Length: 424
Ligand code: DSN
Image (cartoon, rainbow, N blue to C red; front, side, top):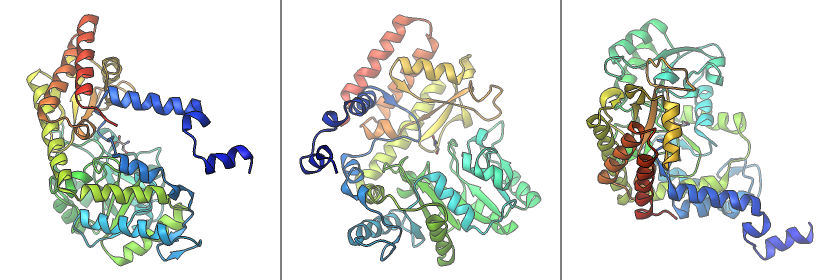
């Protein structure tokens, strides 16, 4: 080891001394997060405790295998972290389902679920289509799911923006899938897991629930729970759950769990990210506290308040509102594309993502909608009143997109809110 490297380890130096270029990236990103209103529905703002665990010496450790059954020595401490993460995850969802906390991401959790569900390549899977709110891994043609399996896609109704469960049942009876996936990345209405389970049972399909977006709400009893209904439940840990980026998989039976474990490792992953698993444990511990339920209630109430404010301002909201933490605003309802809205809002300190809306006539790169979510703003302390103010600022910006004086006023408004609710 060179002297320079070894001295980095004995006398810790700041990142800015060792690598000013990357330190500048981190600093710039911190400032961006501090000074913008973050409405991307899948993002959140983690605690410094989560970041401390994730940035810890656990990153140095290889621990292939599972607690007490590792392929490397020296795993006695990381074993404790993994057991704590599992125990807290079960407590959080009040479930006896078995849990695997090693999935590196939601997509890998979902891939493991496909493999553990006993599907062969070419078998039929019924999932929500991407352009109606589903996820890439629910059968998109360029994803492994769409390439390796025969996909049937369900969507929402044009008049309600919601799933019609009778139609879904008829589709499942006709299509005869081996697995049905419930869950979405952009669906603002409550998902009826009991009805999904009844449909899966009727057609003899495995029911997999991807609760990545709504996991925090489920944990707090603010959305119906998939536990007791699904054979496999997958989630990410960084959205409403407010943990480090990663995935997690629950299984109803020991038999499924054994297959999940072996599909995750050695099936699709090698060494688990023990620093991330430790950070997952920290986040689950935080989510078990009463303050987390207050936070999640604020997330849900704020999303509802924003959707209602947009409607009062004359904008169309997909499905006419929301039951959860997000909704899609149909910006084409006042002649703005999703892309133009995303770019304009960027200039006034508000971050959203353009999104196709169901039955969109625009191409994906333009889109007719923007997706709006409240998990991140509520983590910095916003509540219903601030959420309404944000909706009014967005509406004002979009309605005055060519008037720089108004846009300057909106930018001052977003900065004032950011200053009032600082982060880090
Ligand atoms: N990319 C995520 C989202 O934005 O919803 C889904 O994984």
